[in-house]
Each structure stands twice: as structure tokens, then as C-alpha cells.
Image (spheres, rainbow, N blue to C red):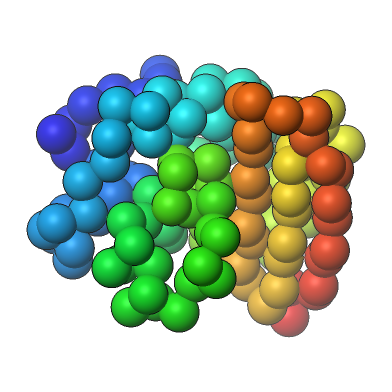
Length: 134
Ligand SMILES: [Zn+2]
């Protein structure tokens, strides 16, 4: 399952982290949602900023509780990814790219982290709240 490709450069393993969370199994719909995000947002972003490290993508309810995620988290349905930017330059280039992208639903950033979400079923909210890298 880990090696299942979601897009040219992203695999399911990067989103579900079965090594840490063995029961973190997505549904077919969750996988379809992740595939959408990878192809429509993350691959285009990668073309601009280079390889992107995904810290966390899909979380089932138990995993979401363990990491203290909000109860309506888009991670529960495969519509979000937490990115760990390599350095301040990649961080700022990612923010510039994603904040203006038509499919960005939410972009939240803080000290060295970034949460990006998408929604294949609704008009993107384009909600952006950015903090600084360091
Ligand atoms: Zn997140």
C-alpha cells in the first residue's frame, strides 16, 4: 500500500505513515481525494520549488485524536497535507505559489510548517493565514 502512486512524485506512504500508525488505512474516496491534491496542487508546486517533504497527510479518527487534530480536520478525508519546507527559501516560494493558486482551500503556516488543503467537491475558500519561518 505504501508504494501506491498518487501522482508522478508522491506515493500513498508519504500520506499515511503506516510505520508509525499501522491502522491508518484510508478509504477509496480518501485515496481519490489525496490523488486530486497531489496532481492538482502538490505536483504543480513541486515543479516550482523542487521536492516537497510531507509530514502528515491522511489521518483516520484515532490518529487525528492522537496528534491533537481538530475534529473536522480535512486530514480525515485526505484533503490536506502538512509540509515541512526544506529551508526559508522553499518556504517563501511555496507560500507565494499556493496562496495564489485557484485550488487552494486553506493555507496555514507557522514556524517552519505549512498546512495546505483542497476540496474536490466545493469552491475553494482561499483562506490564507501565514506566519513566518523563523
Ligand atoms: Zn494539517
